[in-house]
Image (cartoon, rainbow, N blue to C red):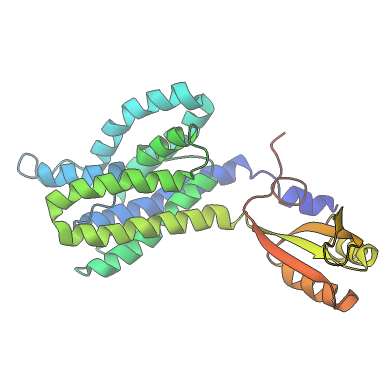
Length: 295
């Protein structure tokens, strides 16, 4: 296996992880400040709770309690819980994410990106915040709030993704927001929550997608050689038996990335036009040439 390819697929440098967290929280702040708060749309999370509290306290404080203040206050007890459950290494990046998001919320100017168009607010806000959350998670951190809560819950419910758990929690916050800003805006907020989940999931899992390929062929040695030489991938031979023909055959199993699947199918057709090829999605692949395990 080419060592250069292996190293490129390895763990991201620490500075890059921190940069992804900072940039990601900046995008989240843009969506919260300039789209959701400006449009009176509660999309869930501690930021959604902060928007509700800001609206409730406008009669007590000029302009209401700032979003960054509420965001900080709500996260303090959650950090202590996360420290006990996930350890300090998890909290370290979460602290960076929380401080970064709070700073962005405090200093970032408000642009009113969507104006009075609630549909544009739901679309732009959902995509921007989804990309932001995805970058933060890819950097190995969280921003506190419901994404940290979801990360804690996911430790015990591992068959659910963090984004799926967040969708449930955020949905509950949206329901509360419905009583503050009205059902009309809440319905658009549901669209935004859905987009946040889909975009963040797509960014997190899409970068890890590979293709698993099963090849039943009369020329397994030639195709295996092509896979190892032309694609620089490994192949596994599995003994199988055709129930119709009763013949014993060798089925090849190989995992490639999305860019390589087209070339693989073309090469297989050239070598054996009669080959039976099955292509499926591999959600996540750990190992040499894909996602390197931490050592």
